[in-house]
Amino acid sequence: MAPHRWAHTFGVISMAAMVVLLVTGVFLTSFYDASGPHLRYDGSYTPLAGVEVSPAYASTMHLSFEVRGGLLARQAHHWAALVLPASLILQLFSTFFSGAFRKPRRGMWLLLFATFVLALAGGWSGYAMPDDMLSGTGLRIMHGMVLGVPVVGPRLAFLLFGGEFPGHIMETLYPLHVYVVPGLLVAVVALRLRLAFVRGPMRSAAGREHDSEGGRASTLRVTIARSGGLFLVAVGVLVLMGGAMTVSPIWLYGPANPAVASNGSQPDWYLGFLDGALRLVPPGWEVVLGGNTWSLGLLVPMAVIGGFLVLVAAYPFIESRLSGDHEEHHVLDRPRDHPVRTGAGAAGAVFYGVLLSSAGVDIMATQLHLAFESLIYALRVALVLGPALAFVVTRAVCLGLQERERTAAALGFETGVIVRAADGGYTELHGPLPASSTRPADQPLDTVPTSQDSAA
Picture 1: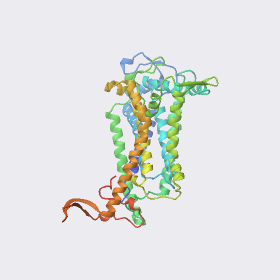
Picture 2: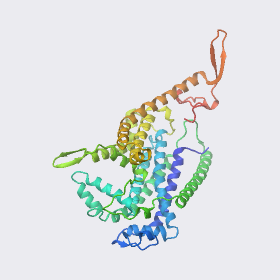
Picture 3: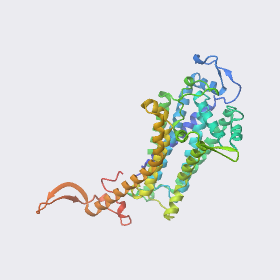
């Protein structure tokens, strides 16, 4: 039977999103203009007639309203940019919890992580390309963050923006978004596919794949057919979303204005964890050292997020070093069989989730009629205690599932039939485990799957 795992499914969806991004991106590039003096808008959207706009905004409006299929391509491109980080995160989770990152596939883990980082970079640079009010507010936030870096911040901001804000940031972002990031993304994905072909698929702990040459060929054919079908479905759904679901209506936001900030602006979801980290920092948190003001409200979140990302990328090497396991692994793990790793993954998920939730704290306050300050305090506590609690609970659940399996292996599964003994006591009858749950000779007792737990 062909491998059918979540990591493979999310990988196909990621590939579909990248193909939609590349195809629609080539189309959009043909009509986009990133440079030139400001002009008076004279397009078909009459509410903006005569308003001074940048060439980037004018060309995006022209693409949306006057080019046949332009709005469909724009929105499909944007939806694919939103779906790609989500599918990559789910692929990272699936790979992590199944132990598919271990030697000799640690390089594939690093390439998958690099794909995620490049997707974030591509999404951020593309987010600013229309030069509307929403993206202009995001650029203002980025400009302030760069300025907040001591010593080199002002010079770096001047270089990145080509002068005082807003400068010529579009001319800087255009080659980054159109050439640099897509080129690196294609190279990283191609290298990962090459390594996946060389290493081969990992085997499931519950069974064995076909090892014969004919079995491998049959498995490959079924995998290609299944992946191809899922790929076409994912592409079709993204195109359908682009045609039926409005996203980034820049005609409602209006053109960017350096003197105005959009109230209640939110970044695209995949950058929410960065924005959330900034919102949780206490106000006025800064010190003066060496004649420079060190804004801890900016530096601490940047350091925490940077450390978290480095920890995620380096985890395969950290686990190998701490456990002393330097052997090659070709069989997938079940999460319950590695309580510490599973607990660490749950802690990381809670940490990321709290930061992501913090990005929308102002929306939660207005929509749920809660005090903004109370939400901030609650999220600060959750950021500190939540990961530790998630680790403890998840590890306990894994150990409990292992104990349940050991009991089932020794006594059989519970039938639910209660009988009364001659002395008046009651006992439950146990039946033999199914044949599929019989422990192989080389499989530890605590990894025996039972009929009740096989899906966990």
